[in-house]
Amino acid sequence: MFLLGERLERENKTVKAMVEIYCKKNHKSNIGSCRECREIYDYASYRITRCPHKDNKPACTTCEIHCFSLKMKEEIKKIMKFSGPRMLIHHPILSLFHYIDKLKEGSLKKNTSKS
Ligand code: SF4
Ligand SMILES: [Zn+2]
Image 1: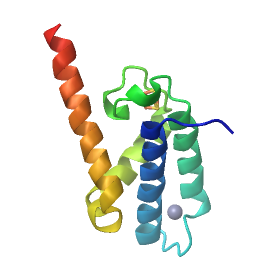
Image 2 (image 1 turned 120 degrees about the vertical axis):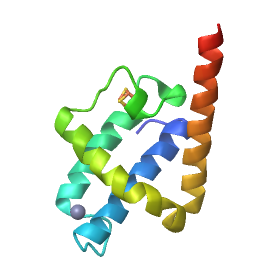
Image 3 (image 1 turned 60 degrees about the vertical axis):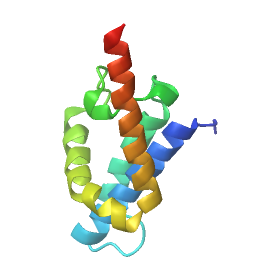
Image 4 (image 1 turned 30 degrees about the vertical axis):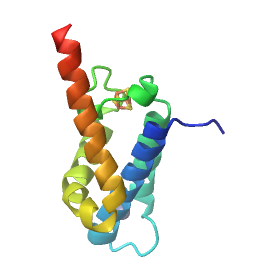
């Protein structure tokens, strides 16, 4: 086991929470997530925890590397679209950090484009 940076750890937790919300509502899963959703989470987690950007990781949607397969990209997109708005209710702290990360990313891009 290797140590993850704060950002990657948080992102990994956020994806797990989103997959669980999606699974609970759509597949009526009572504990964690069903096998299909678990496989999606495992796939995303493997990539996020090994993201070459490390703690400067951008949102995957704006990444130029795009390390997800097309199929998994669509699966995660579907889950995020469903669970994103529900995160504020179920996981307000993770949701807040997710928002802060997005703001930081926006300001980083602005600063980079000025130079
Ligand atoms: S798509 Fe980009 S940002 Fe997302 S995990 Fe892969 S390399 Fe990292
Ligand atoms: Zn499921």
